[in-house]
Amino acid sequence: MGNIYEELGVRTIINATGPSTRLSGSIMVDEVSTAMKRASEHCVDIAELQAWAGGVISEITGAEAGYVTSGAAAGLLLGVSACVAGLDPGRMNRLPDLTGMKDEVIMPRSHRNFYDHAIRAVGVKLIEVGIADRFSGAGVRDTEAWEIDDAITDRTAAVAYVMNAHAQPSLPEVVEVAHARGVPVVVDAAGQLPPQSNLKRFIEEGADLVCFSGGKTIRGPQSSGILCGKWDLVSSAALQHLDQDVYAELWDPPPSLIDKERLPGAPQHGLGRPCKVGKEEIVGLITALRIFVAEGDEVRAERWATSIRSLGEALEGLPNIVVETLINPGRPVPMLRLKLDEDKSGMTAVSLAKQLIKGDPCIHPGTGEMYEGELSFGPMCLRDGDVEAIAKRLGEILKG
Ligand SMILES: *Cc1c(COP(=O)(O)O)cnc(C)c1O
Image (tube, rainbow, N blue to C red; front, top):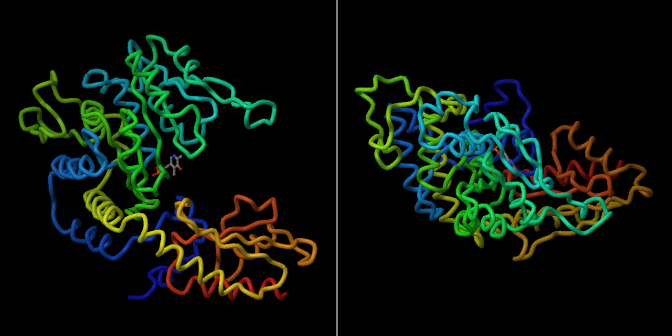
């Protein structure tokens, strides 16, 4: 079958940036899209399907419970809703009115980012802690665990933690102070794969809830994600997410996800209802997750390295650039770094990026170091033929 976007009159791009939402996430393998199509051919009870998916997620992450969300950001919203409302259906129904509930979430100041809209949407106030003067060049420190402890009060519903390689303070330190005060820790690990050991790591380090994106490295549906962690929190998230348009007498949720006996009654549609997930996404995400785990870091890294090496070879001899392939076992995702000689070429890396994006084919490079005269090319969303097309287009531009 041909390119559907050609039929639709929508241009496709060569994505060397990687699986970003703006560029439509990753590319699903046939097994995943086939599973989604097959999922679309029958109706099921969504709660039962989520309970099954949760079982697979638990097994893979080591968490007590798991759930499929519509993305990592949705996982933050559901997770914080769970920390605030617990297993109290009255509270669930009242959100985001937090009258009488814990209404603050603590976050190290250096972790703040605009995905925290998903946290603030629950109605909580974000309490920023610490000063990250290591970023201003004025100092060396970041938020420290004792400062989080210092900020915890009886209004603290959770500590939110955004994981990345340089995140401070360390997760175990944050967990230690939060748990000592009975406060759960919610981890945004949206893009923290590979290594796939991270699927287990943050749970092992004591996080109460962890969110991953399904549409990034896992190569699941673009609008999917994982929420995993403590059973009662995941259960609360499920209760605030699942459609509840059902007579109480007929409500019979799967016990592995929702313990009806522990609830005074069934909540209505919750705050998380707009983040709904279809059966196709649930089946697609779990299929992709199983494939991701089965492939393993080494085979995946070699698959990626192969396309980066061939891009490096294809760029050999082009004028006014120095190309470096960054492939090593310590590096989760290999990439190619292109350093432009801005004086000799008479153009800046910014204008080179613009020409790549505006040209035909449309090519999106990595632009994180653009203002330092560098572009990068990542392997995660490249298709067959893309390496040759990138080399050809770069040749056209650089040779004038
Ligand atoms: C990508 C990302 C998100 C959002 O993930 P979605 O799955 O698109 O909702 C949230 N937080 C961080 C740090 C991210 O990188």
